[in-house]
Length: 218
Image 1 (cartoon, helix red, strand yellow):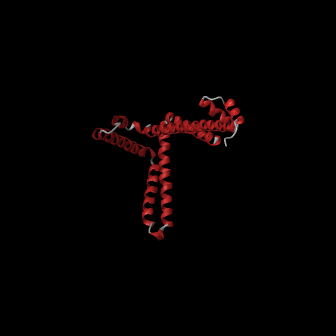
Image 2 (cartoon, one colour; image 1 turned 30 degrees about the horizontal axis):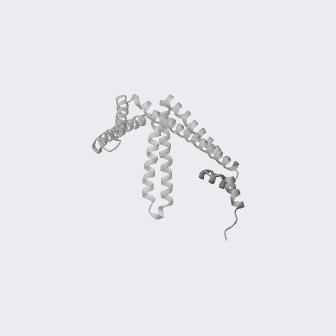
Image 3 (spheres, helix red, strand yellow; image 1 turned 90 degrees about the horizontal axis):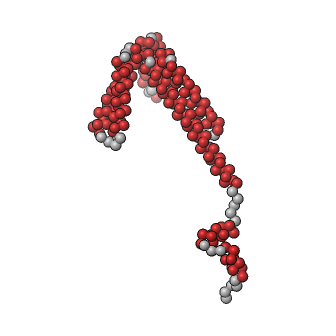
């Protein structure tokens, strides 16, 4: 357990450092995120093509081949001109946030369920962020994606660090309880009898002596 918690804390610290660097160098992190997306699409497309070829006898060739080719083409197009595609991805993010925020606000007022205010506030924040992204476009293309990646890494790192310390504290408490249980001596019958008479308000010694001196009834 200590090794696992240490790994969680180290991994969370790495995430945290990367998140801070991503927030400091948002243009570079934005470009890196776009190139990473291109690489993921390319690898996923190759995997789909290979899976389709392997499963061609079961009629899975053309569906997986089509998806694989589209993924590979999208990955190549994004990698060929990452800056232009960063503009397009930023617009997509902005409009998605705007649509999501409006839907949350309208839905919270229509349904009126418990906690609708928090849901509406979440929607207002989404609309506010979308407005900033779309109003400052195209300048926002150089920081939007990188900022989102950085914030996600920071909160992910903090979560892992908190989880690691929580598990470590829980392990320490468990070990203390186990050591305390091992240090306890087993309770004898006389001790149980003594505590019983104490709870009854009787004198254990006199009761025990009287039991010894009493004769059995015939």
